[in-house]
Each structure stands twice: as structure tokens, then as C-alpha cells.
Image 1 (cartoon, rainbow, N blue to C red):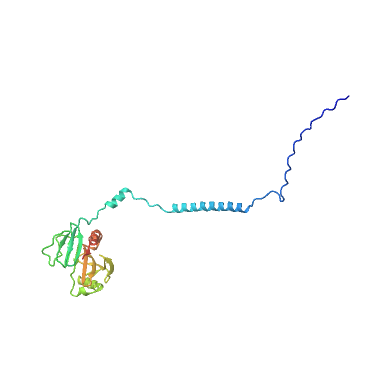
Image 2: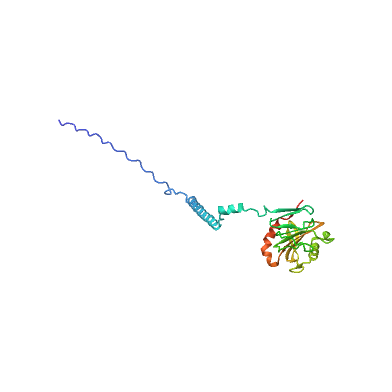
Length: 242
């Protein structure tokens, strides 16, 4: 009797991988390109604009010249410069209500209410008829006066200047030339002429019924540059007061 054949156990089969689904119709999905390109272009424009704006500002800053700061010594010199008129004498006329300052080496002469004059402290000549003569040569004389002919106070400024120029027998450098200027805070008429030297003359009307003149008299026309600075400093202190 033959033995029964041995049973061979079944070999387990490896399950096969699930099938890969086919790609969707139309192929690989595509991202929209227009928004991406627009974003890149916008970034380029912003970067370019920022670059040129910064360059423009740098050029403007470079083109503006810098103002140099004053040196400490210069600043101190400006702050510490004293007014040369601070230590001058002060004259006040109470009748016509005006005042001015003058240096200590000048002296007031003919101190009447209607007329005074100053010069560089030279003694008057006692033998001189009419006054105004000195024992020496004044470098500068300045006359402040209300010596008018009758009726001149009632004239307007232009007519007063013409009449006064004639009355003091001036020979104008250019005959008939009387200039209109602003000085002493007033409308002033100005003329140059020859009167025992060379003079700068100012005619004014501080009030409707008051005429007034100031004359700076230099030794000669050639001497004007020597003494004009001190004359102007004195005149800069002149003012009418209440």
C-alpha cells in the first residue's frame, strides 16, 4: 500500500499595489503667470524709483553750499564790539526838542537856543567879527540851527530848502541840485556847497511851522574823506524828541 502524498501548504501571495489613477484630463495643472509677472514688475519699478529718488536727494544736498560757522573769535568780536558813541557827551536842546551825541574832543560853541555848532575843541578867536572864527583850523564843524529869514517857517520843505540855500550864500557843486533823501527819520532835502570850506547841508521840517537845518562843514572838499566818517557817526545820533 502506497503512502498518501504530502500536502504542500499554499504560498501566500503579496497583494499587488493599487493601481495609479490616470492623470486628469488636460495634463499637469498650471499656475496663473500674469499675477506673478505683475508682482515682479512692480517690485522692479519700486526699487528703481527708490534708487533714483535717493540719488536726486544726494545731488541736491551736494549742490547746496554749506554756510561756514563763524570762528569763536569772530563771534566774540561781533558780540563784544562796543558802540563808539556810548561814552560820548549828550547835548539836549529843550527849545526845539532835539538831541545828539558828540565825542569828548569836540566842544559846543555859540550855545544859543536858535543855533549851536561843534568842532574839535579849538578856542574861538575873540577878535573875529560875527563869531565862527577859531585859533586854529577845525577839522570838522557841525551847525544845528533855526536861523531862518522871516516867513521861512511857513514855507513847504522844497521852498524852504531853496530859500535857505540862497540865504547862506551857498555855491552848489551843481547849481540848483537839491536832492530828496530820508534821514533823521524825516523827509530831508540835501545839498553840497562851499561855505568857508566844503559843506554837506540838510534841510528839514520836523513840524509844519518849524524849519531846521544841519550843516557839516569840512576844511575843504579834499578833506571830506578824512572826516566824513566821524561826521556821519555824530549825525546818526541826532533825533527830535518829545
